[in-house]
Image 1 (tube, rainbow, N blue to C red):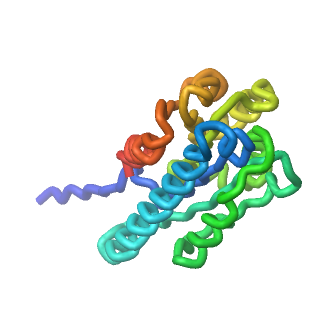
Image 2 (image 1 turned 180 degrees about the horizontal axis):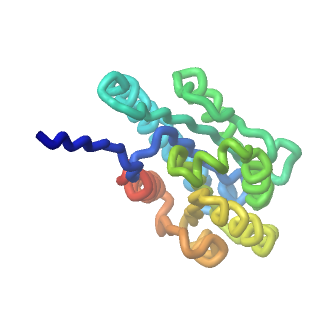
Length: 219
């Protein structure tokens, strides 16, 4: 008799053990002064939609944990930019928590828009906070990191945005810019090639849903 021994190895596919999603909201004054404040209202709705969708996703992942070799861990954070000292501090820190308190806190903090378009500050902060462990996980396919930036106008420094986008994307971080109305059309150039446009503010949640669906399709 000839015994044949076969070793079966699991090949790492497109399933990710950890997902981190960052939403960067626009706190520039044009969110209020143009269009009767509709853009600010729709941004809040989109943020609520994202948090509710991610809460459902995280709950489902927890329910399926027992059936999965590599359980999914879903974490999220939220930043806003408004040309203030707080641009570099998340208004919701990266965590699994997405309960009612966290959602209300985010809603309160993005209910005003007194500043201008310093979108590069949160992006630079995200880049600086990437640890060696994070980079290794991203490279090995164990961590999928997605950053979505809302903006309704031209950045205060588009070149600075593009410089930090290059660094993040080179490290495997997915960064998508979403322009809000025709006023945010500059995002299609600044955040190219990963950019979308919500031609009407009311379409912002739909565009966000498409972005999440497209970038989580392989999970």
